Each structure stands twice: as C-alpha cells, then as structure tokens.
Length: 170
Image (cartoon, rainbow, N blue to C red; front, side, top):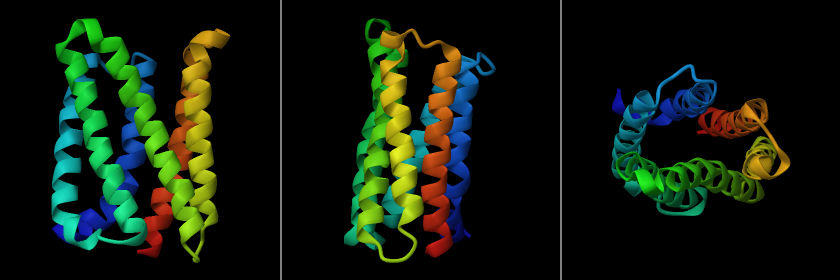
C-alpha cells in the first residue's frame, strides 16, 4: 500500500497543493490552514524522500531526489516565515517562487533526458517557469490577485502535466 501511495500520490498531491495555494490567494483558506499545509507537506516530503532514497540514485530519479531535498528546505523556509514576522513576506515569497522554479527547471531537464513522452515535461516546465516569472513581476507591473491566480494556474497545469506523465510512465 505504501509503495502504491508513493508511486501514485504525487499525481494527486501536486495539483492539490497548487489549488490550495490559489485558494489562499483568493482568501478562501486561512493563513493558519497554510501553516498546517506547510507542516503536512514537509512531513510528506521527508517521508517520501527517505522511503524512496535507494530508488532515486541515478538519472532523472536522482534529479528529482535533489528537487525533494531542495523542496524540503524551501518548505521549511515557509514554515519559518510563520514564526518570524519580520521575515514572513520574504520567506513566503521565496518558498512560493522556489516551488515554482525548482520543479519547473527539473521538468525541462527531465524532458531533455527521457526518450519516451518528453513533451509533457518540457511544456510543463515552461508553464511553471512562465508562471513564476510573471508572478514575480506582478508587483512591478501592477498585477493584482487575478494575475497571481493566472500564474498559479499556469504552474498548477504545468507541474500536474509533468507529474501525471511521470506516474503514467513509471
């Protein structure tokens, strides 16, 4: 059962996480719920990484093990943001944009390394990176909540396409 959850769970958890972040941007979920989500995510990432460590030793799996390790640190930065008010905005932004960029780059790299069905990875990575770039530029170009939601939707679609392709091919 645990192996099956590790193999298929990410195809559910990735879009769920981005949908939740979008809900927070729309004030449909509280910051307290976001803290709980960070704690749950850190626990899931740590458990998944530890349980999968021996299987992720080369090729694209090694690349994704590194994504998980960096992602764990990015998630911890978000958690620290809840504890240190003076750094909250910086750490929340770094955590959010980090989760857009790191998997985005890894998806493009995965698409360049695999022979079977590389397009969903590359396109997914490009969507994630485009979402990150426009989201980061939002305050400079006067973007409001709907621009943020648009960017989060790009990231959600891109990363979901990549992980669903990976789960289907695994």
